[in-house]
Image (tube, rainbow, N blue to C red; front, side, top):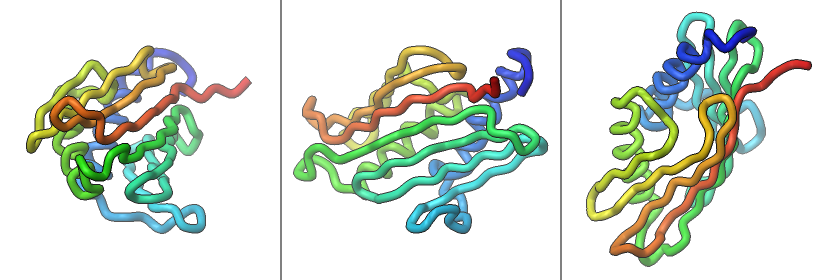
Amino acid sequence: MSSDNRIPALEAFIVRAKAATYVGDGAPAPACRPGSHDLRFTDGEWSYLDSYFGGRDFIGEEVVFHNGRPVWAMNYYGYILDPELITPSQTGQVIKASLSQMYIEGRFLGGFEYLHAGFVYTDGNEGDVTRFHGRETIRKNSELAYELVYHGGLIKDA
């Protein structure tokens, strides 16, 4: 990706890829690292890989490739803070329902709140697709049950 005029295409692709993989229950891809869970999506000259470890508490990285070259990435770490408030299954359901709604808006970065099954999902970040960091949380009765921190941006050679 050589210029900023491709940023809108990158953002649109990221939303499609995220909607089609984890949130869309995309089929798992062969693991690229021992023990990883991988999801892939391709659309023309763009491809996406989400590779993570764990389940209840997890860490991972998403990478977008343009014509085979890495151009964007995001790292994330999510964890349940209070297993008395939320189960891993509930966490996944809340995240998928919430992110589905955000993706319908054609975006994937914060400034978003969604109520699902008695839980409040919130995503907030600083920056934009080129360079950002943020946090998503799930609360039950105003108590913090789950948190994920993330950061990422464009990858540039030299």
